[in-house]
Every structure is written in structure tokens, then in C-alpha cells.
Length: 186
Image 1: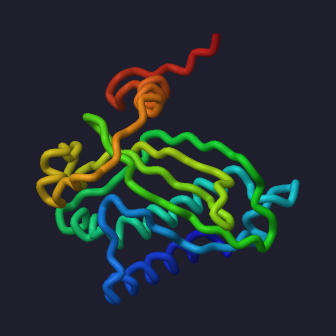
Image 2: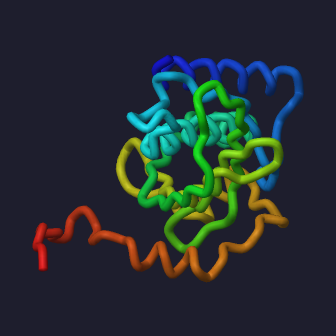
């Protein structure tokens, strides 16, 4: 099953959960149950490393919709883009294996929001990704955090971002889009 069909299914399920009152607080952990399908596998017959990032997007959709952030973004003409992400693998997901995508907002810095996604089997973490995303306006420019939090309310219990994540975000950043970024190899 192509990821687009899974995405549409997750969006439909998240909307249905909201109608049933299963909303999430911004600091809550969202969970989506998935199965490793044949289209997720690589030549070694386990989940392809690139597929994890696509499937973690499903957790992000569920979290955005169930926290109400997606509707607030849509109403204001905002959208989020991933500016960087890092993934760590611990164990392989095998064909037909059931797993949960667990997702939560972990904090922010002066420019971006941070999220963590995990692939979990029976309570055990198989893979984890840290995502840094920027909030942009369809009309152009970025959405400042004071405006974002003003529209959504800043959660009091939003966990802090670990120092290593701040260091990673700074070390992995590319120049701004209007600055030169030549491809020079050492």
C-alpha cells in the first residue's frame, strides 16, 4: 500500500477520533498502529530505512489533527516544513510486524518546533527520529512563535529540548535560502 493511501486513512481516522472526543493535549503522545507491508521492505527483507521517515509522517498527521494544530494552521494559512531530522535505528521491523508510531512535540527554539517519533513494538523502541520543523505562511514568511502560541496557547508542560538536540540543529543547518550554498567537496 502506497504511503499516500496510508496518509489518507490516518487523516480520516484522526478526524473520526476528534469527532468522538479523542483529542490530544499539545504535550500528549499520539499513537498510530501500523503493520510492515511488503512495499515497506528493502532487498534485505526488513523495513527500508527511508520508509521510516515516510511512516513517521503519519504520526505527525495524527498529532497535528488531534491536537487541533492542523485546523488552526489551515484557518490562518500556515503550513509546516521539516527543516532537519535525524533518525537512529535499533532493531529491524520485519514483514507483517505490527508496531506503533508514537509522536509528541518536544519543544521549540527561537525558529522552529521539535517533535520526536518512535517506532515501538510491545513497548520497546525500534527506531527514533527527531524532527525540526518551521512554521511558514502561504503568503510568505515565517510564523513567529508568539503568534503561533497566541493562536494555540502555549502548553505549560511542554518538555524542554535536550542540549544535544540544540547542538545537532545548529551543526546540521544549511545556509538560509537567500544565501549562497555552493556544493564544494573537500
